[in-house]
Length: 142
Image 1 (cartoon, rainbow, N blue to C red):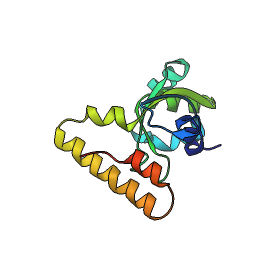
Image 2: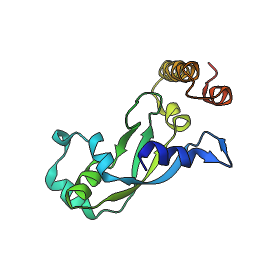
Image 3: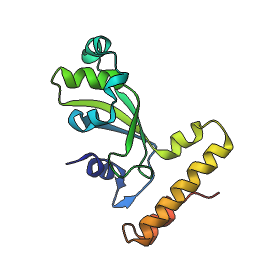
Image 4: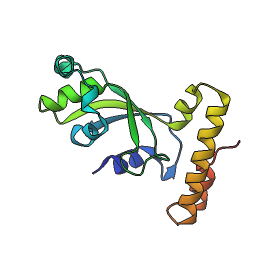
């Protein structure tokens, strides 16, 4: 099962889709390694991190990416080191948009992101990918 399917399952609660701000997950390193720019990795340090079992921290970018909708914000070296050491998975947390959106620098940044998300949700509704209820749940009040 791919990341999107596993993440969607974690967003389901009693059959109703809910916004979740903090989800614990186990990531497949083969999928996650694509999110890491190897040129930005200190390989010696990464191999030292391969035994570090602290969870990684990722942001949910569902409305910004059609591929693998997360961004690693803490744990790139751990992921790279574990991958090179032959490990298959890494534990981590996904911070939902309702949590990270308020960590932006200014109110204008927050409004801009909300507008982008609203446009993306409306497009998904218009092409039939989500229901009207999911549309209502996905929209931000601006």
